[in-house]
Image 1 (cartoon, rainbow, N blue to C red):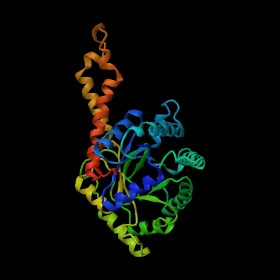
Image 2: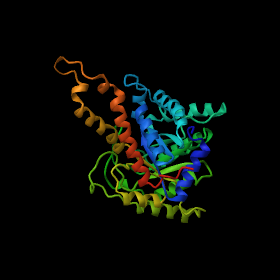
Image 3: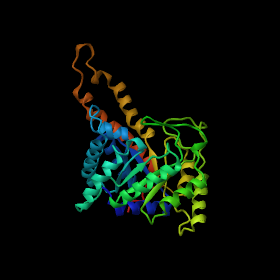
Image 4: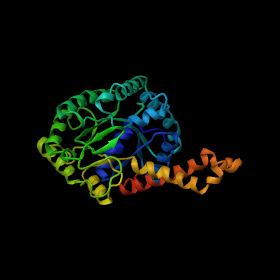
Length: 341
């Protein structure tokens, strides 16, 4: 299928919230990891979300070029072509964008999508994330209002973050402290500033102890009940028709326990970001392949090695299969497996 249209993407997210399931959002940084992610979604019978971070976008443009916009548009063009061969809907998303990178990442991409929409096409990306977790809430929501209007014009969904995700991603580090937990007051302020759909479609990443990267169980306490309290507070305060007014996003999803994931989904999470786990799932088979075939991939003692062994496609297939399997597992944990319509 072609990359999801704005209408298809909105329907994906609405069905997920209504049906108590969520889509894995898989970070990619190459054509191989993109193909692995799409393959995993197809094998799971699930629609899905593929996303690129600022660092991933730089890498995609070429490690000596480091142009986030070029890398993002190159990925989008490639994805629009290869996704046609799969029988699931794939949405493209840009991950965490802090304030100092908005003008070099999200805003130019929104401008490119706006021009494409004016010409009768669909946006390059279906959603963009504004990460305002490092600025005061008032400033965060003020910037979000401006971006929401720009996203609406480009037929793009906005994702915002209210609260702080701990750990580190692409050089942005969040402390592990009480700010990891969003409050009902934060949720109400968000709904008052951005509305509940009447000013444009957006997703909200409320934080409930999330941490990026690798961490051992017990280091941080995930409290999915915070999401329930936030939904209830907004529903009561604004008398919304939906008792789960927010489309929620779960950041720092790698390594989470199945019961924590299930609770978050029940409280309105429709998208869960996964990066660390799928990075390992991609790289681990490559390590195994190299150890097993070291005499073929290396020219030992003056020999010529084995071209079939060191052909990047040989170990690349192993990597893609490993990552695809982890995507299938994520779809099963999030209950999106088999939900494609």
